[in-house]
Amino acid sequence: MSAHTHVEGQLPHEPEKATLEGRNKVLGFWLFLGGETVLFGTLFAAFLALRHQVLDGPTANHLFDLKLVAFATAILLTSSLTSVFAIQAMHQQKVKSLINWLIVTVLLGVGFLILEIYEFVHYVGEGHGFTTSAFSSSFYTLVGFHGAHVLFGIMWITLLIIQLKRKGLTVVTAPKVYVAGMYWHFIDVVWVFIFTVVYLMGKVV
Picture (cartoon, rainbow, N blue to C red):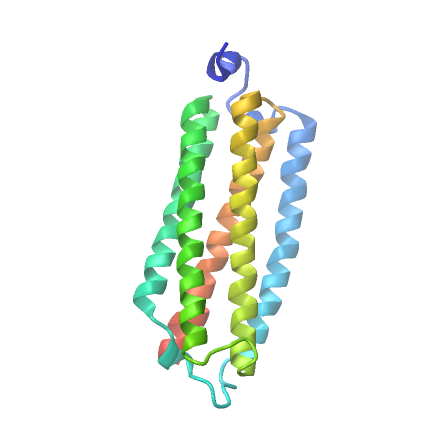
């Protein structure tokens, strides 16, 4: 029996909320994201306070390539859309479609990370190392911390894909997919703020 036929007609429209455990998992994750928001807010504040302290290193205006960063941003925002399609597929109990959209989300996330690593290597070559200045340290801490979150999200969703292939869509696996989608949207939103505060403001302010 396939995973699709196993769940056909047996799960509610929102299987992530079908059990008390599932609802508690979603609620608990909202609280976790609240803590993450405070943490990123602190890193943003530190960056804004230090971003003009470049010493002998390159300035943001000299350093940043907005075309590359805009392309990376488009990739990450597209991955947010594909994660929405994955959740829609889950609500329609289309397990194969769910898995496929999650795979696309992971691939886009990997593409984003590759561009970010390329960007960092380029910056180091331009004399913008982690210890070059207060600006560089705060930049790598904020952007690198976000990159670590993207990497964690990629590994998390990959494990969920494996679990869905083995166990199918159930009231146990559905909340896991849903909170992973919440997490992915969160890191996408954080990146929009990074793109605006770090890169755009670095070019114009």
